[in-house]
Length: 198
Image (tube, rainbow, N blue to C red; front, side, top):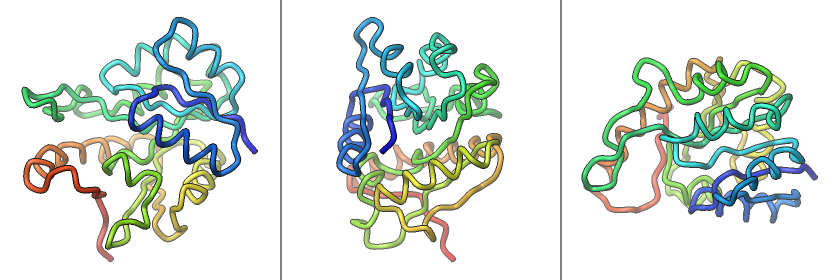
């Protein structure tokens, strides 16, 4: 059992918290109440960023001390929404939210994952008709191994998990969010994930 704090109590954070609790972990979900995120992060071994990506950097930098020596799993994409509420463009072109977080929080081990799919696939990858991919980006090998194990507990098969390398590789997976509005406009909110055909 691992103590996990999920920052963000929307659809992404809620579904991850439910699934990780079911897997036997002690999970705390922090909403927007003053001090809730700090309290949750302070007592957790792993912190999951499921807050809206546009404001994630400021929110997490404010938790620098609470996040020291923790594994920070970043599942958010930093975008400016278009007029229909779907992702319009990247906030950090030529970089990524994950890179910005790692630079701002050097004593935190940031791992990017689960940001290339509709939220429902994060905790139920086997429901898709084709094998999905979950990508890992991060500079700390031990942290990535910890996150890999969490993914397996969420139903991801080992062969579906691809380690892309260092944190700078997150700019590639974050850019995949630009597919999302077009896929949703074409097919609706049917569960999907970005996959590599092999």
